[in-house]
Image 1 (spheres, rainbow, N blue to C red):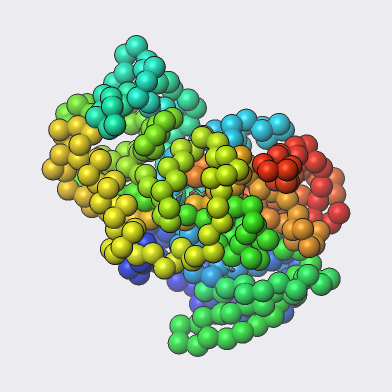
Image 2 (tube, helix red, strand yellow):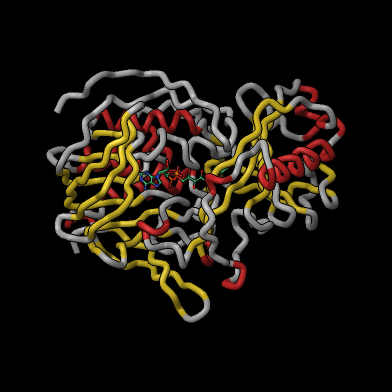
Length: 422
Ligand SMILES: Cc1cc2nc3c(=O)[nH]c(=O)nc-3n(C[C@H](O)[C@H](O)[C@H](O)COP(=O)(O)OP(=O)(O)OC[C@H]3O[C@@H](n4cnc5c(N)ncnc54)[C@H](O)[C@@H]3O)c2cc1C
């Protein structure tokens, strides 16, 4: 099937969640939805696009379609802070391997100009500072460097675009504005899709031999994650460029990104322009959760309310952004009157024990789920996207991380070998 046309450069429409400073400079060719595919991937973020690119590389004879309900990168991947972090939000996991090394290799394998820099990441805290902290900010106490951990930054817009380009060049079909509304767990799996072709809305059913749900904080009823995971909207802002002297004064000359290991939570990084991104805050319900802090079973309350009802210009979401801005202005006198160029929010999925989810759907071995990075998914989603693509190959079965109920809390069942075809 030939694509209908090819447009290369995207312009972002204003979004109720605001506009991040990243650009996804790729739009896929326009395809008609197929009737049947070998692999259907639901979700066009880092996870889904990485899996699509790798599937076509591992199984070039098999058809792959990526179904994205909005535009590529309209979920967390185009709205993220772009800090490339090691391990998972729950720390090291048995059998996970070196996420950052794997991430670097993947970006290189697909020739993605991601602006990846790995100078390390500062962990900041209000107690037990390192001897010579370059950072000294005022934020519920004195915020200083505690230690340096592996990691760095990427331009996430370039990563989304690069993965999508790699997937499409390898022969995957990527269809934007195609929302999967329901799954029938038959063999093959049937996906009911609502497509939006500009002025025309249409419904279509696709049959797929295998399905990967890479829908992150959305569509929890499809993935069956509704009881075990909590979606939230989180926030960030970017400042106008700072001078070299200003960067030195606030301790960011090294260009290292940072996050706090205590509360209130704050993370941030520099842009190429020398603007600084700061991020924090969650709606609904205040639940300040740092990337590494475990959440107790009791703090997980499920909330069926749709994140799309939030608008960063109004109500609770606008309030969280005002709170973030006021904190940033008080961190250091250099930031007191800095101009804010971008304000935005994005979805995040919290799981119990902060464990990523990579497992079969409880209702079908032909459906896999990859999600739940707990704000720690820039490198991990791309890395595990490759695992998801390897899983269907009988000779290359990968460890599945399965979040399984163990009484009141959830436990990790590591080193479970499996494949989509089990
Ligand atoms: C503001 C913010 C800052 C962050 N900062 C960092 C950071 O610095 N470092 C870090 O490691 N992590 C960070 N994260 C987390 C990281 O960005 C995510 O873990 C990662 O992007 C998840 O990628 P994904 O592909 O799994 O999900 P997403 O990018 O959210 O992709 C899921 C896609 O699925 C689509 N979809 C959902 N339902 C359907 C459906 N039914 N049919 C079709 N399509 C559907 C959505 O539209 C979406 O595009 C941050 C997140 C946010 C929001």
